[in-house]
Length: 262
Image (cartoon, rainbow, N blue to C red; front, side, top):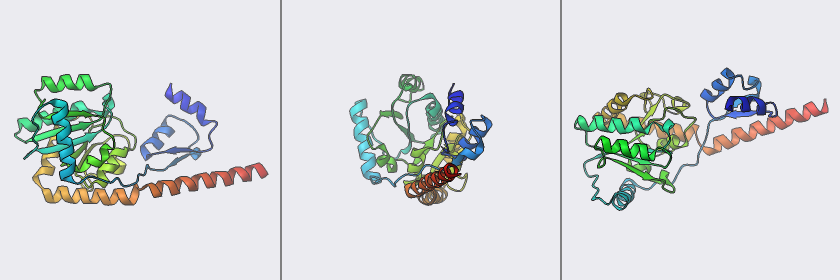
């Protein structure tokens, strides 16, 4: 249905902006329109005002203590974090499974997932079944959650489907070591072993092993995080997106005016 609607509405559009090369190729494969109508302009964002690590961790601790009514303590724990709606395509079940694998291998981690959605009940039940209630926390929707990114020691995007993730760009700007699945535009954001680690989707063990490899070398994880920040600031800034979008509109108007004159 969506493909048919895209094909129909494309007839009335002069240009269609794809936010990733992945979407551009998908549009061509699905025969949405003549590829002359398609152009790629990657998402861009303004750099968030991040809380420092200590402040961000305290805010998260206070939320957990309040919502879960427990004496939460993250001392000596590695904080894995992810932000996204609790939908199936975010793959959070695989992140929960990876947490279990890490704990079974004596890696002291806690996993924080910020977001709300239809999969909450299923995820809560699964966390209970795996006896992870003291290790995996669903914090729900938090205003300006991006400001808390520096609380995390590792950011994980476990999605099974993705466009060009704003949250992943924000994690890059926060200079975090990142693990992301090889779906959608993720590989356009993160270059494997250069600005983060890319793993196959729906693969619990690869997520867990990647966490271990990042923890084994602070030098390597720090270098990946530094490269990720540099790439985000240079390639995915809002100023670049606005400039490219304006240029596209301007060039389209000129072409239309010429066609009208002729």
